[in-house]
Length: 242
Image (tube, rainbow, N blue to C red; front, side):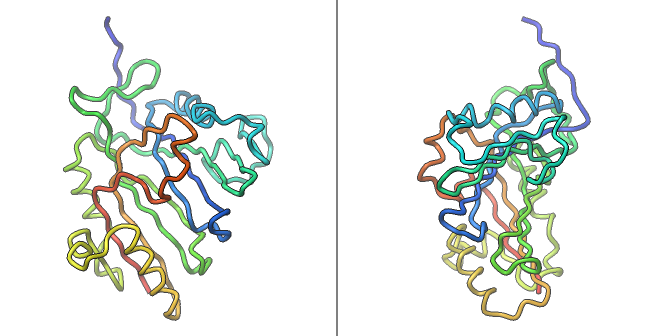
């Protein structure tokens, strides 16, 4: 069967953010899942509105549930957020769309689904998470931005290494340095967060650079018992500025 292919200037990424106020009332403990990418905003919105249903959640499962549609006047749940849901236990689910340039000239079908080259199981995303301790010492002010979408892991690694300038930061760690010190991933982040709390914060901001592939979550149980830092991380940069 012949498939119509086209390439758009922009990509639209469907993102699920889970903020666990039950475990950490400040909201600093959260997980971000990139669930998919579409070539049109219409296709991305359609997927975003179906995320919680795909996870086998129903609106009645939540203490609060809101959808940002065109007829909604005011919206207090953040730019780009289309679905807000708060569970009785305190976990907040945010489904959002983030837009980036289509630098890889990825092709899509007429429904907006990305067509990956043969043998490529998933896209690779370079993300930067900025935690602004100037606005809140608990670390609850966080913003994740997709800095690049790539077909090949090697290209994602090159981009990740160039995102931050070590000279701009008081401390700059790479996976190689953290592996040598015996601290990687979540443990390293936890230890360094404690370290930051012991110093006077004049102008402090933490940046985390990750490479992750698309998350495949098919049911609600997939989120239960998972580490909140359970992204498929291939590269990790840690830096903070004082």
